[in-house]
Length: 442
Ligand code: ADP
Ligand code: ASP
Ligand code: MG
Image (tube, rainbow, N blue to C red; front, side, top):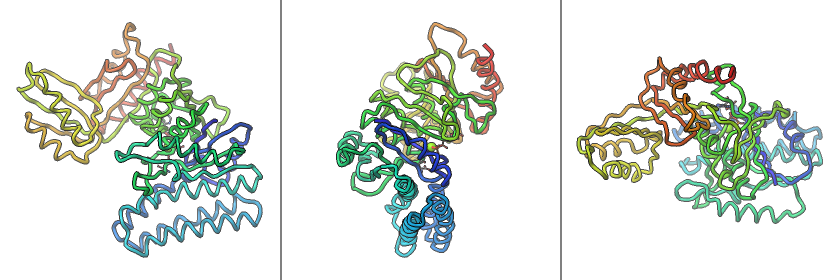
């Protein structure tokens, strides 16, 4: 079994959907995970925001703004009047459903139900197209098997059991289509895997069926060495290890959902990143073993908060760090970076949900300083401990940018620095000039 995920741009128009149908139409069992058509989830978010603010007229307007694009897709996607009719009926149904939320009191629980509409629409439209083209396929409802637990984490044993039950209902089928991103919570309510979550669905599905390979098809030819939204002349990386890819995803490489490598890594399923617009391009292969020892890529994670705790009690004391960590544990707030000196500890978080109480508790230990709008720049590669010079190159490139924290040696594949958010673009460009251009030349 293979798992192939197509992102928003890849299914963003009738033409793109037709290309996807061509790409998947080859022998062999596969599960195809689709995102919503590009821009749809953003639009649905706006609708829920209007509804939460009780701006009903605005919500109705937003819903009707979204509809023409879907009508157009139906007109362009199908050739027979019967399927144009079928497609239009589907859209009428879904838009009537969206409008029904403007009639009654809107509760925050219903927000996720609205956000699920994008993937439900794209998969249904796509599957009708396959039907019309006489390509045999089965639409698997993700809401029957994708589930998160009480902590909001995907429940892999549940997914494995229920997905396999769904697959067993169709022993003679080879092509399955399902929705990315959407799932249920432990109470059975519609939920999701957070923005960009279709990658995570693909990885969870791939892990659940022990797939031969998970392919993430997107609008770029693989993981690039630097963020192409800020830097020109970036290039794709042929191979990455699971650890390297996981770090890049977690630290801001938008091409992958932050957590999506972990399920694939757990079950050793290789992940390939491919470009729908250039299907022949090699892309990036992510697997257990990856070639090449050197600096491979850089990513940046925004909206970081740095907390500095200064305390004389830390001097020659043990147990101090444990007490500090316990505060973050109590508020389920992960720490990304940490540096310590004899009398101070600085750490970073990216969630401000419980910031006030965390600070209040930390103030029991000493003076606490907090700064927001920081960025972590994470440089990833395979840094052999006995080869010198990696750090020198990086810090030399960044010499004009104030570095607030440095993390080096935590693993052999990550060097991270904390800078002010305003310096992000400058840092990414400086690393391109000072590190990657030199690599290409050597
Ligand atoms: P999809 O809709 O297919 O999930 P995304 O927009 O989520 O696509 O991810 C692809 C985008 O990620 C690219 O168009 C690119 O702008 C952005 N991106 C950011 N960092 C990287 C990187 N290091 N390598 C490749 N793409 C990146
Ligand atoms: N449609 C969802 C989003 O835009 C999930 C995804 O595209 O991966 O966030
Ligand atoms: Mg994405």
